[in-house]
Amino acid sequence: MGSNTALKLEVVAETDVGCVRTNNEDSYGYDLESRIFVVCDGMGGLAAGETASGTAVRGLVERFALNRTSGSSLEESLQRAIFYANQQVFLMAQANEELRGMGTTLVSACVEGRRIVIGNVGDSRAYFLRQGVCAQITTDHSFVNEQVRIGSMNEAEAEASPFRSVITRAVGTAETVEPDIFAGSIENGDILALVTDGLTRYADSKAIAAIIVGSSSLGEAGKALIEAAKRQGAVDNVTCILVQFLDDLHEPAPEPVAALDPESSVEPDTAEAQKSGDEAESKGEPEAGEAAPHQ
Image: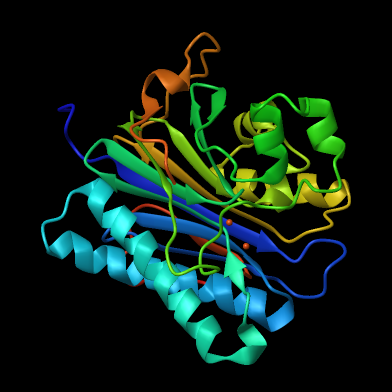
């Protein structure tokens, strides 16, 4: 099969309110026709957080599809869709006093042929799994990550910090937003994970890899990731989208090879740049519109 031939997709999405909260401020969405996937983690409290994340998901998925029909590049289409999602959330907050100050994290990925472009704002993350090795692709826009970066805090201190949930960039809190954009190539068997911090506060890249590799199917892996967070208390909502890329859905993916580093194929193109509700599972390539944004 040619190196530029588009890979088929298997997609699983899971979300859970967690063990403490009574409402779910996470949202996710995807469109298999335009090959766009997004997870958001809303903030602002109750209805505001849900509104922010749901609005961002719908805006990004819809605008990305329009951008692709205009001939824009993959990177441009995703970046402009993030700008549009930010504008929609910001304008809604300005028009409604009860929603003032709401915002959301955002992590998104889009695919064309065997190229993948990932964009993020906030601390929802993208991970890339190849042959059993998992790498974090995005960089958190958070207070503790900034402190670690400048040497004022080590990793252990960051994990224990009461400020670990404070983010330094968000969609919808200002008129403009600056996403990070990453680009790379994909191969048969690769798996993309888009997740909120409700999962990553309990599972690092090695734990995520172990859960996915140890699962009998992608659907089981998605459920197992949610349960891993819930077993440890899940104080926040927990959401993940898993996308596996395959040459043929009946052809098994390669066996894990621990020596391969997935970062060799997914590297940052630029360094500028995350919180909603049920479960959905789609395998193969359904018709367009079968998987609508969830909130």
